[in-house]
Length: 204
Image 1 (cartoon, rainbow, N blue to C red):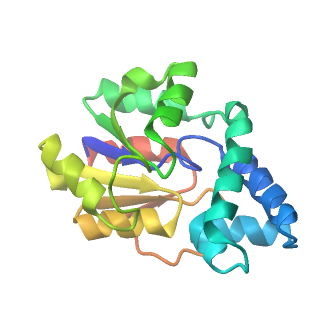
Image 2: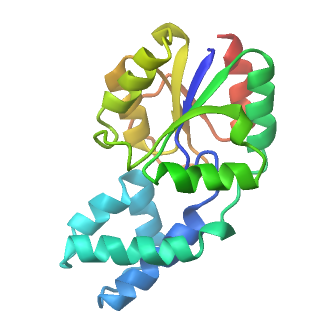
């Protein structure tokens, strides 16, 4: 595998603690009481957007409030310990890195630049890039065409089922980063519990 398309939140960066606290604060603002463990599992197994659609709240207003709280603590999020080494090791053997995320392109670049990781990444597609959200494959197909990627050498790496479904829908390989050990509802080509387990897969 030579072309790695990475999810960002919960895959390259440990952003869920900040996201969860922002979401719990927003839930409190709208008089919604849910256990933190239940909220975490829900957003890992589906998405924050899916959770919001199931709540008796004004969805657009709730979403804007959540993102405002999350943005205030954005700088508290950092890459997983293995992320720099894995990105560097893969690039050293000729891999390209792309990021497909539900956060904005600029906020993603800001974190990568702060942590010295921006030079590893060729392109970021974010929520403001104008593509349908995962698991729709349009954004992946754009990267494949734009960068002339060989689908047989391209893989989507993510920590949620929707990442894997997006990869499947685009006809590329998939790696499920199951850091929490939750039941796996999808059928990825590979499943890992550590980013370092991806390194041997580069030769496949």
